[in-house]
Amino acid sequence: MSLKQEVPTIEKEKLPRHIVIIPDGNRRWAAERGLKPWQGHEAGAENTEKLIREARRLGVREISFWGSSLENLTKRPLAESRELLRIYETYFKKLLQSPDIHTDKARIRFIGHWEEQFPASLKQVLYDCIEATKGYDGYFLNFFLAYSGDDEMRLAFQKVAGELKPGEHVTDEMIKAGLMTRELPPVDLLIRTGGEPHLSAGFMMWDIANTQLYFSDTYYPDFDEVALREALADYAARGRRFGK
Picture (cartoon, rainbow, N blue to C red):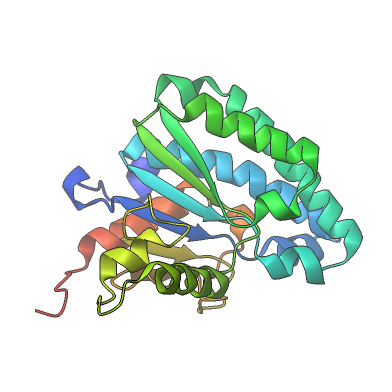
């Protein structure tokens, strides 16, 4: 059965401009299959490619993925952390070489403390992605790596406090300018997979103030194009009042 048959057609004007996906469930997916945790991360990376293509096909302008928190890299077993970094390097090399990225003029951005946390070879791959796509504005791919929302907000307030003039009032614009996500629009739809309906580590707390939330019981490696379309159809069917 085709994607079109399984999920209603979504009018383009009802699509969210900015989607965020929190890809939870890779490790549990692997454990249920008797695999190593990083094999779940590899399956998740492969699925990310499919979701990016489908989102672009549908006309989504901006899509963000939370790749790892600071805690993911510091609290998990060393072997798993090393494999995760290896997967990042392989995946982002492949992404940069994808003809679709350059044909569709996709700008790639990385958000978080990856420059402080990642090895030189991986950082070079990310720098290459940034440099090669910095002039593109067809659509936007954002990856949150070594990121914590609590940390982001704390640093933003430190920046505002350091620049605030005597008698000056703090504005929304000042706070946004101090965030790692200063270039990103507000999030319209946040999708979390893996069956645990919650947010984590203050993820994008400023930018998700008016976000629609969608929680899926499906582990991320199995959250395929049909599942994405179902989430978007659910979003399109909702009424947004913004307090009115």
